Length: 360
Image (cartoon, rainbow, N blue to C red; front, side, top):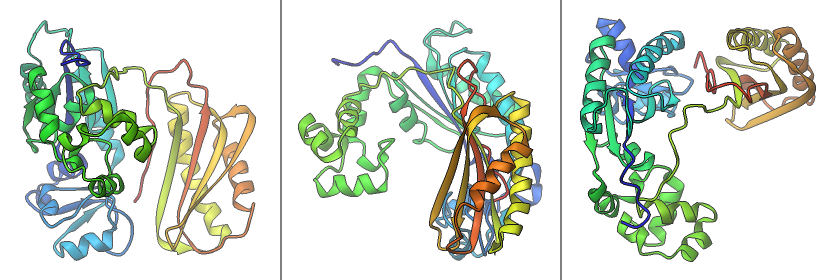
């Protein structure tokens, strides 16, 4: 048990198919049916899928066209981020009734450190059960939870009994749990890394644990040290309740590709208006403006400019965006445009929102 910190009690709460579940809750006609939030059968990308859709292989980040191919009965609905945020705020208020150590990862998931909690309950498992019941009663939505001694194990555990379930990995169970775990289920190990590990004979946690630190660093660079530690239950990252906003962004995927810069500027003006609203709401300004362009062949390009002063006004942002847009000729028609503001005045601000995306 060397390196483990069994004194910490971490809960990872993950809402079940959050965006799709909200749409099904608000529209009874969608209940029990395969639903995809975002995209369409011709364009765009799926942001979230209901469990009924997932049975057909529909997942977030796949194209709408592919999703429709997998599930011909799939119903596409446009995302309503204001509604998702409204419910997310209700859920976070529940979290803060139990602990101030809450680290939101997105609108639908968060870490809670309940080692010392406002309820004085020593059982993190009972607290997770109570929190999930509160969420269900107060929002009508289900959540799953993972409970363990660190964020890494809690995150993996929350996926075990989805939907509407929870799993606790006690201190004495952490090592056996990680040793038996398929390598593809390790949080942070994506498709490419999984394939590389398979080629190196690493299929489970116990296989990973058999490799030396030198071996892992040789094949995985800096990540090697991370893999060496986590498979031994060592992950000392704290639940950070004061994550700093690094950038604020808005983007739009178009139903029809744009080939004229004049039309692009019209769309960018609308995007800048949405961005300005968010900036003004949280009193955020930034010095670096970045224009994101995704072409019809799905290749992507970013163009940035840093100013000597902070800005948040849409007019000033658009001036820079126009300059960036005409910086060089377009190589192809455009399917997505986005604007982000970084290098922000948020050094003393607490976590607000990392990114705004809309209209898939």
